[in-house]
Length: 129
Image 1 (cartoon, rainbow, N blue to C red):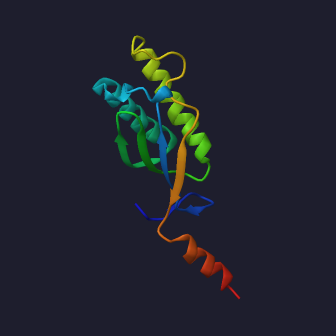
Image 2 (cartoon, rainbow, N blue to C red; image 1 turned 180 degrees about the vertical axis):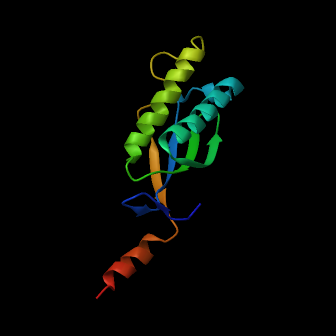
């Protein structure tokens, strides 16, 4: 989980914790079929876009997703890909699920996680001379 990864030009460790909710906090994620479609779609997107799903938890009114991603993807781009694709698939497969318009709210939470603290990095940088 906390191992550095490499591309041709970068060495990195980018882990993101995302949380997002359905519009109006509707409990659409109580439906096991919607829950499974969401999980399957996230795993398919991970393969397509080369990010690693470290942990996922789907609650009745929100989703936690912990991923490790390439540096070419900003957190907002990742959320656009994940929420956009899952939302379209939910709308397509469950047209009578009482969802009007967007499945997800526009808002989300994101935090980064690594294997050193912010204080450790600050101390390291300040003591380079």
